[in-house]
Image (cartoon, rainbow, N blue to C red; front, side, top):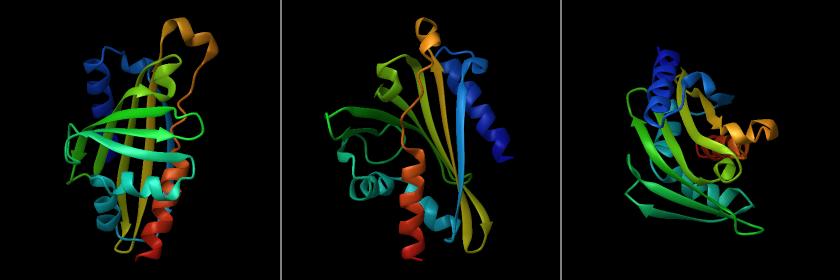
Length: 172
């Protein structure tokens, strides 16, 4: 059911931003966490993950909430060091029942060098009462004029999920 929801979400979102869903490329990672899914979701569903990223990822200088309170429509800008490059995203889906959160990239990352769409989704999947899987999906589309260069997102999904795993397991 969750896979169907994710597929439907990406197809609808791709239509919304004017991209054929077959043009989207996906990078998917899964990480098992020894913590209840409800605790992992509480970290991911609002601004908790953003605050953790600043503390745990050495190349993140800061994050700023430009708009919103952590719900759908919230816009967050992350600034990196060195070079002060940045990435801005808007939370587009927060589904408490399915434990799915998605954000659409607005500027920065591969949008600055050839991608037309960048979508980051986190699914928290309950495995048992005390463990879950954090599934991360980065979907992107490449502008036709950049296809030969094949740009890829640099969103640090593995570092983000590893930092959240360590935090959740330490506090569980």
